[in-house]
Length: 191
Image (cartoon, one colour):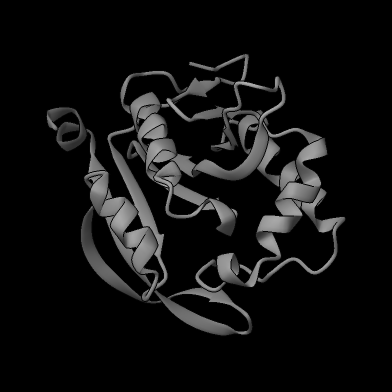
């Protein structure tokens, strides 16, 4: 099943929709933040034009049907244009074993408001209710050890810690361990 139009998800406080080219400076703001990148599996952006490269990369996930990444926007009753505060979605999905890898980040000024959980819940719901072009039974998340905030968000949303993956990631010129979490469709629908 191929989706022709990018799906928009709405929650109480957020709108999750397609990234636009003019989101580039907000993306640069997020991906150049030392606080955000402390536990992120890539190097920080150093030039504003790199924001557009990230936007294009994430847009291509949907165009090539290899994943989907939503812009997370804070809903504003006073404005038609909601502010981009982060992204969330599936970095990739694997059709042969019905799995997907979830990723997310928020600008630091929006941490602690429950927005990450709210976005993840909407994404999980879309995955497990047939709103995506692939059947998903298992959602995985890899978290850099020490990222307590991200682990709390995952556990709050029903994810289970499975294992420490030794030297799974490579960035900043060194190897990094990753903690693997998962959420099965049957567990998500039972809660």
